Image (cartoon, rainbow, N blue to C red; front, side):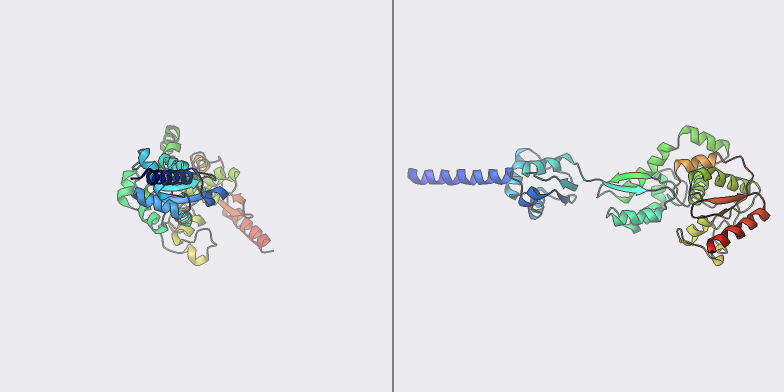
Length: 331
């Protein structure tokens, strides 16, 4: 082969190598302007990952990405998930990010007094899990046994807190983390105090969940707890509206007289004692209030406004308070 042709081939090869090197070391136009989000599905091969990154304009050359991944021995080390790719990241940085597994975390707030149904809607809205799947797993007997929960569902066993989940987690993994957080918060001291009051953990969470839904301000939790403990001792129905709301799936909506008459195990107007299980996720303060009711003889309370209640000992005082505060609210 003439030396001129050899020289031309070498020059073209050098130019091609230089171009490929430039493409590998230079951020795409999209990443030069701003950070980008990309999701790598599970079980996707290296070639498909390269194509996906190129289509999303996160790398300039799929071939360059493949060559770099093979050279680094990273072909099987790339992890699925959702990634925030920082602005100005070139191909080596994109590859390193996928190797690291530093996937995007989604903050999910499960507040005190929230239900499994409300959590399911939040998770679905965040595209983290199907609400239907969350509801199914939440009552799956095998799943409940794996967590040592002797109840029909995980209601009340999901500790209220801010959690960080990654896309791709299963409903089982999400709920397990929340139940484990509860077990970590139920210290041996709390469990011993519950036993002293003849409360199983299930009954403790049940009572605490009702207190959580009834008491809006913190300084009323122990008073609300006292009312329920006093009624339980006298075998009076608890008459807690949130239990009826839970029975009817009415969340926090106003109840009618007909609602209060519904024959349902969670209707504490018709059935004395605690309902079969929790109606929401109680926080630590509500659990503490359930274990330490205020030393008062109150048997009744009525809402004064959207936050506070008036507490009474006798039915006559309670009826007077009901008339007084309901009339004031109408005005």
